[in-house]
Length: 638
Image 1 (cartoon, rainbow, N blue to C red):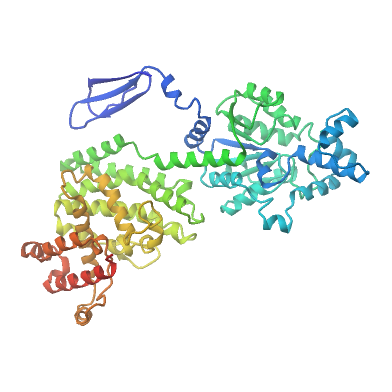
Image 2 (cartoon, rainbow, N blue to C red):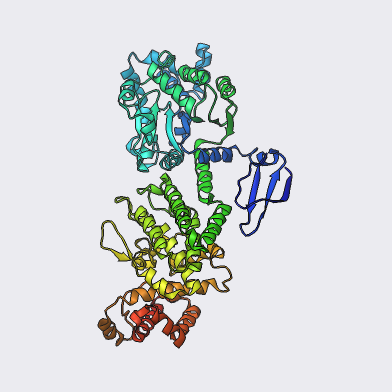
């Protein structure tokens, strides 16, 4: 693939449609831009030509809920639930041993030599049983786990089942068609807090929740092993009921398909459903451990399916999940879109007559952010807390919130004071959205307000960068409405330990590189805002110290709410904390602490902050604050 960069003249923010693939770059400060053209798609496609698993993961991620699964017996093989062939050979062995035949090393070969035919699952079941109830009893022993099975982890959901369940919980998969009788898929889904709609008979189909309204719809074509109405002989599988055919026609027409564990040779009615379905809308992917048989080849040709070589189902589905998760966590807002938002904010902020456009710009971005925050992966509140799950959720919140945070940073840095109400409205909206769900895991419920924390921190940093001390105090001390509890100030709701999501240090130590940090949330916020800061802090020679100054002043705002008489009494001690207040990384970063305290003690800085409303305008409260801060530092320090 050849790349060519061309400089052209065009008005800023004009949308272009260029033949071929292009990456536009727009500089709002000028009238020029660049784009990169690709002379062909061959080079791009070569990125995926030998990686069908990533191709499939990308299709899943970009077409959320548009793919259905077809799962056969191979999926449950690693759970030590035998496939149909293995049950067939075992039935040959059991019947022959009962007749007095000696043990054979290869029962299938023995059967061929004796009868001249291949062992046939359907034929054996029909010879051995006379009713569906009897066939169900035979299958029950192969599927139902015994006590020893459970103790040793057999006949329980596999890594593949659990990976699928997590994909369902995140909204990537909603429809599962299976020929399996077992309940491993249902069990795995319930472990993830997903209650599926299960259709295993015509009666269940008639009374089931509609396909489009179900979070997860499982169609068990052959029935359930605990139900005598299972289908497992050639005659029973020659054709499906009309209602089943109609549902399959709809699924195969409207959804892409991912096939795993099914050979394509067995179940003539299912093959017929594939072959009569039109080939349109979404692709079909077929996971295969080796060469496909003639029956599968026919379906592959008709559907133009993509065959994905696999070792086994576990690595196939965990591989898909891992790639989808990587795509989700790395799918940040387009940096150019963020630059456009930031530059538009600056432009509207510069002229009072653009006040309406400024508010509309923020309203639109808040609406878009709330939609992103309402995605299934960010609204699941029953997921077990693991390191990977926490890291993923935090990253998703950050990539979703970067645009609005940078816009608020611009307001803080270059505003004139009139924008304070707008900034508070944005933060209150994000906080209210983050507290809408009332039950679930406390960790996930509290973390749902993390975007409001990022917005609060970015706007506050912009104010500190501009040295707008009076506005910083008014902002941080302003009330933040809460639906179900008494109103508290913004700083008391969203700053470090004051924030409900920040008072558990161990969960923030789950983030990479923060395992042994004393102040992991503070350190992480510094890392995030340092990356975002060039869009609003611009030429800041020591951003770390700027951030630590912001935290120090927020700590002072919390401290000044304490009872003065109680503070004076506590000050007579030597080591005890005088009053509760959140303290960030300056608690252990002695060099910054010394610089900031020295500045706080300088007459000019002290008088400026007191005039802005800090410490109730009293020198003595600042002195008590410094004493308390140093006592905290003695506890936090390494």
